[in-house]
Length: 307
Image (cartoon, rainbow, N blue to C red):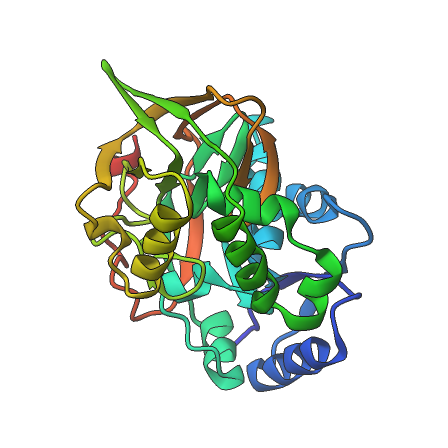
């Protein structure tokens, strides 16, 4: 039996432990791999755009690297090209997508996934022309991403976000956003627009959100100040943020958000993504996402659903 054709985009500057883990995965998989190494920010997007449709494309990295590759695939589709299915070899800081699809993080399990993935169609979200798999945030979470120390992130991983998140809570910036969904206008100090149940790792922020859904879940948090942000932060760690009495959850295919407190950052899939205002919708260009065979959403979305 011929080996599947696999391409992996990988950052060679990743730490030695990550490189050794990737080598262990590939030894278990026993496949011939085309390894494409990134050399600069945005390079994963450029590389993904050129991968042929008959390949299986994996990104060895985190959610930010996967986001770059996703945007490369959409670039290719807009240019009229067929694109390969996309998967993740989780080597990043949070690996939220891997958690979302239930990917076991042991080397042998990831190798089995590379060799025999399931596939689902996903319509990515798009914010100001940039695609995302997971979420867009503005408020305390975007302030955290905007200010986190990259040096500290390399040293302590997720701990850097925890420290900066605490600083955002105890030294809050005033935020006032206007969110337009259909004919309804909402005001909030924090907004998360999600296409996934999980956030920041294994925390659940929506019971019904799904990568394969044709809608986005919008969490609206009106509270400002230390006590409100501390309550939201604690609720997040208990998987109850979306169940707070003052938090609204609205489902939609499209929305716009603007700031009434000056320039405010937004984050996409855990990466800084510029400033408000923004328009968010679902892309007309679906992509095939490779998932484990036991993923709950497997085979729930067909070509006809996306037509």
